[in-house]
Amino acid sequence: MTDEIPFWKSKSLTEMSPSEWESLCDGCGLCCLNKLEEWDTGDVYFTSIRCKLMDGESCRCTSYPNRWDFVPDCVQLTPEKVSELEWLPPTCAYRLVNDGRDLYWWHPLISGDPETVHIAGVSARGRTVSENDVDLDDFEDFVVDWPLTVEDDMLPNPPAKS
Ligand code: SF4
Ligand code: SF4
Image (tube, rainbow, N blue to C red; front, top):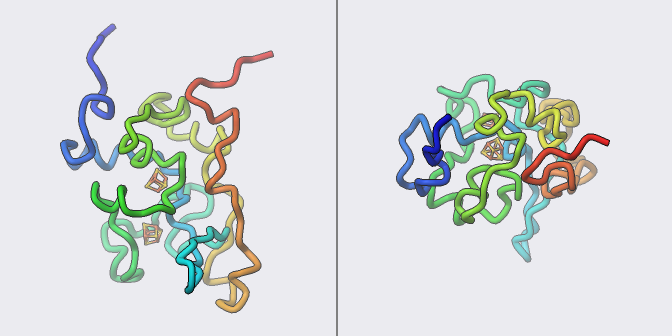
C-alpha cells in the first residue's frame, strides 16, 4: 500500500511527462466526434458522426502516429488548448485535471481497466456513424447532447449495488 499522490493530483498539465499526458486520455472518443459551429454565435454542437479514423467500438484513432496525413485539422491537445477549447466534454480527464478536479471512478488510471470508460456509458462506443457514411448536408440531423452530459452513475464513485 502506498500513499504516494498520483501524478494527476500532484502535477499540473504543464508539468506532466509525455507518457503521463498520454495516459490521462481515458479513451472515450468524444473529442473525435464532428462538431458544428454556428457562424454567428460561435456556439458548438456535437454530432454522433465520428472522424473517419476513429474506430466506432474501441473509440481509438486507427492512425494516431500519422493521423495528420489523413486529417490535417485534427486538434493536438496541449495544456493551452485544454483551457481554450470550450467544447471539451465535462468528463474529459484533461478538463477535469485542469479544473482541479479528480478523475471519475471509471477512468482507466483509477480502475486499472480500459473497459470501464465504456461500461460506465461515458464513451462514444456503439453510438456513432462514420463521416464517410454521412452527406455533409445531413450533419445537422446528427446533433446530440450526450457528449456534454454527466449522468449520476458517472460520478466520482461507482454507483452502490442495490
Ligand atoms: S474527450 Fe478527453 S479523455 Fe476523451 S478521448 Fe478526447 S482527450 Fe481523451
Ligand atoms: S484523426 Fe484520430 S485523433 Fe484526430 S479526430 Fe480523427 S480519430 Fe481523433
